[in-house]
Length: 322
Image 1 (cartoon, rainbow, N blue to C red):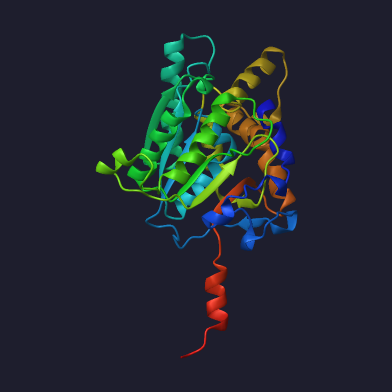
Image 2: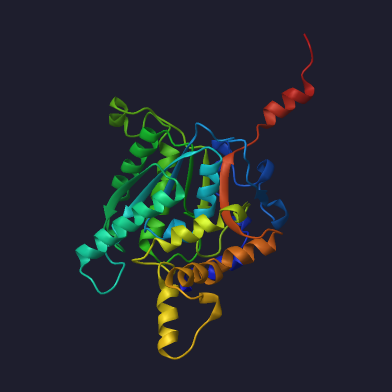
């Protein structure tokens, strides 16, 4: 639970907006305004008309429990709306898990990661297998190159990952992944970067990013995940090797029973205990964020997407017949 303490208190930080976005035609806020305020947060609701059919989503996480904790509801929503999704895990999770050998931890987390993809409806997983908690040892050019290749190969339109501008991130796997993802999505559409790849893939520009953080961050997009809470719970439940979810509730139920106590919320069986524990405690920040924005459950993001064209608006308003 410690790792999520910050997210319930997300900050809107206009000073953190990268100035380079103006020249890229991207915006981090509604209508391309140069600063953010709480009033400019966009609430994203679920649509049933499949508006994203034919588009590709890349879901990128260093560890198998990151997306389940921070963004699983949004992933499920976007898949529901028509995206084809892929899961990219950058670390091998060899340091996550107790009571078993390193090799067993590696395999257990790999299985959990595959289960997360299945639960969220993602088509395929790609494991880059960098050493857990040691990703700052690697040359970021290599990581970028591999991500650029995948973005081009999969023709990724939208991605979800850690925010490269998030504050107070202590885990090197998180901040290295975030920086590599941001650089890769920027370069993937340029034919002058990694041109040797163009023998087998074409340049492709990623146009939308949903960035999350576990510390204070820019929040300009709030996604209503109320219809997908059960899927988010399941995605946390299948992370049994690490994370605050998994079978933590079942273990707590057994511990209390050995002490002659019980929590009614944990029910009368292990799976109910684990599900209810995740919903009540692991997802508590989503409930808090939802209440803040008049929703039942919500996830918060630093969203970057195509900027509205002021030229197109001007032409539409002012053009006259010849």
